[in-house]
Image (cartoon, rainbow, N blue to C red; front, top):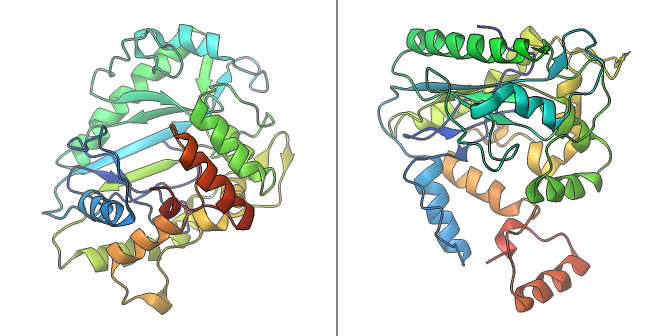
Length: 315
């Protein structure tokens, strides 16, 4: 099964709580099917309980999932920009809502869902499977289907973890992506490189039984650097050599240390994974707000004048 540089992640959570593994460590992110998306968490204590319940849901480690990303290129001229209109036409009924609000966003034949990253990178997210062999068979079939759809439109999937031909440029614009861009721009251009030019692979695993979580959490972080070294194959970006074996990793390291630094380290190997992750999340700078009342906006503006607002500040 082919995937570009940027070996992905280990997912922690009984109904697959995704982690990104970008060489620096595991990243839980709740994607549970029983997540109540209408619930509003108004206090830090409620956020702590929510994160512990969703991101570290324990149980027998039985499922594996994967998320694969690629840059998308014109087959005849890989340096030619590919716009949203062309992607929409190629993907048809599989187009995500961020690309076409009227699309039914149908899954691929074997259940994979197609989404697009801000720079037009294509992502396939698979359902969790009970065995790695079943996952590979289903995912390879979905990749073949997407490859055929793109080929009919004169498009191909890239083979690197960062676009070797084109400079970063937006293709899919949403309010969240605009907020991300604004937040990352405060730290320099690496955020735009990550958003618009990088692609990776995220491997999704169950957390395991309660007595296994700490060891599995430590192992997921420990294998990151070796995996990065083994699979690094993204030395060129925007038509030039970067001096890095993985320019994708270089972009990630430069985005924002509060979001990309390792959560685990050998010096803190005994720390509880759940407590460590929750502290990390709540200390992260606030990225965006879906909606705010006048009083809340005023409070956050006053706070921002003194220091960067964090996730824990928004309640």
